[in-house]
Amino acid sequence: MSGVSSGVGVYIGDGLRQYGFGDGHPFGTDRLDAFWNEAIKTDLAKEVQVLDPVSCLDNDLSRFHDEDYIQFLKEKSRDGSGYLDGGDTPAVPGVYEASSFVVGSDLDALDRIYRGELSRIFIPIAGLHHAGRQRAAGFCAVSDLGVLIETVRERYGVKRVAYVDIDAHHGDGVFYAFESDPDVIIADIHEDGRFLYPGTGFVQETGRGDARGTKMNFPVMPESGDAVFFAIWPRLEEFIRSFKPEFIILQAGADSIDGDPITHMRFSPQAHGHAATQLCNMAEEFCNGRFIATGGGGYNRRNIALGWCEVLKAMIETA
Image 1 (tube, rainbow, N blue to C red):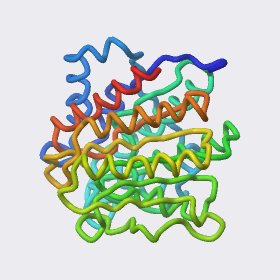
Image 2 (image 1 turned 60 degrees about the vertical axis):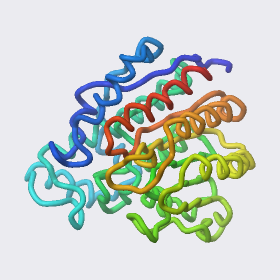
Image 3 (image 1 turned 120 degrees about the horizontal axis):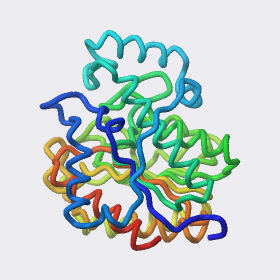
Image 4 (image 1 turned 90 degrees about the vertical axis):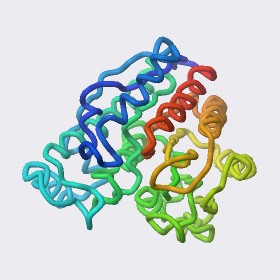
């Protein structure tokens, strides 16, 4: 990997702890420490470079989000009441600033990778895959993923970006934002939209226009476990490989692991580890090792700890 370090980085700090919606909300501010305490306990924390969260600028957000939405988010952040959407995403005080740390950490990770400091980086509180260009949705005030995809192409001239999502919920905000873009390759395993929010991501949705065939949805039935995941994965991997991506992003939502309180899937943490291992290997083959993983959803704290640690372990072992 010429010019690229083989190290692994993880963003940990108060900037990312801020993103959440208070005690008692599924997306609480305790999610980061649920993961990091397990990483310390299992000594994985000793194997990585700990990175400080970084805030982004307005013009970073505007690579993906409309200016009117950015202003709306700022106003609701100051007001600190009501919702950013129809009732899922509370407008808590400081939500704009917290969102800026999520996006900024993604972008700082990207810059570190392209400077050759690290080859792969995990941002645990990130992967906000429901927000669209003009709206918040599903606990996602912004789309850090949308900004990341736009930035890696604009700033570093990447042609083909592969985005893989194994969160229980369909990554609708990413999927539909890039549905007509043939250079963004999307593969998404999720609980069938007939049974779970946001009710999208059906198998016949493969992209529009020139992008037809560059997207692949894998909706699975409630109660689907590892047998289903490991039956699907070779097809997903073959699909991604066929496009020879230049950069790979994983959204590793832990809500697809057995025991999540708001979904109905039964994957094990080992499924998440397998996905990360295989994508890291693919990044070595096609992307000069360059790979970013984001934590995504997950509302059972033990599942967050185990699932994300499997992802981190895979990133370390393949570096």
